Amino acid sequence: MNIAIVCYPTFGGSGVLATELGKALADKGHSIHFITYQQPVRLSGFHANIFYHEVRVPTYPLFDFPPYETALSSMMVDVINNHNIELLHVHYAIPHASAAYMAKQILKKEGKNIPVITTLHGTDITLVGRDKTYSPVVTFSMNESDALTAVSDNLRDETYKNFVIEKNIEVIHNFVDVDRFHRKPVDAFKKLISPNGEKIIVHASNFRKVKRVDDVVKAFMLINKQLPSKLLLLGDGPERPYVESICRDCVSAENIKFLGKQEQMEDILPIADLFLLTSEYESFGLAALEAMAAEVPVISTNAGGLPEIIINGYSGYMSNVGDIEDMSKNALLIFKDEATTNQFKANALAQAKKFDIVNIVPQYEQLYERVLAESMLPSS
Image (cartoon, rainbow, N blue to C red; front, side, top):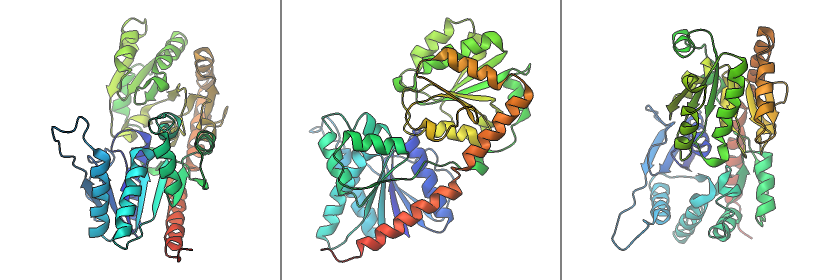
């Protein structure tokens, strides 16, 4: 199949999943055309079946805000016309679903019917999409898509709850390439971080308020009082200056390191002993899944879709949002002895394998085949 994928190229979960999906499909022989405003961060190296098309938005004094959506629609039309695209798969509803609808209508005038699949990822539904400024367009665009998918049962339910959706939303869970993340840790790297064998605790996010990264620091401080440990904070975002200010003033400051944005998470996660996620809401929790694939147990909140991937008391523990005392207590339970720690690590890997890329990508292929077949049926 010739498939065009539209996504954000950033470190967020939607862009990561879209890119990894495209790479996996390319490995299976499909031709994949990425359409976005810069090369996705997870798209590196040459692949004969992968093509990247950059959306450029001309700047004119007339526009206070460059019309990205219009440029995106035009690029979709261009790529579909010139590369025999059979299907358009857009990730994150805003503005990709509405831009795809416009492109589809333009192509229909030219006698081409391009099916559009929209995958919902999280804040496009639970935050931005619910804003009255965007809600009518988001609702319309979702209903005009030929198929709708969500990355978790929780996100599907939230979509039905907050929007008037006239069609079925299929759940195809996020996935992880277990082979990529399950690798032997680099001992020299681990010793550099914890020279005296301290436990390494990792958090990774985009440092938005919803991630409650200050709770990560507070929970770590409680853990650090009881157990020699180090905290690695990966990522960047608007809350980072605030979190850094908290760390400078805390007694555990020398044990906390900010590593910034990291593209090669598979090089870092294997050295970790625990992954800490304190979010107020996660539509799925891809970072937690990647940690489990690296054989790292997870301490998280029980928010959103996290209970769909983390089994409490098996692959980690879940606590109520803001309950840093319970999180620290659970972390110490995992570390109470070596046998317990090793069991949690093995369980984390076993749970991650349920979401292995080899199990999930065929679900997308089946969806593509079905939507393509339906698009060829005569309209009533």
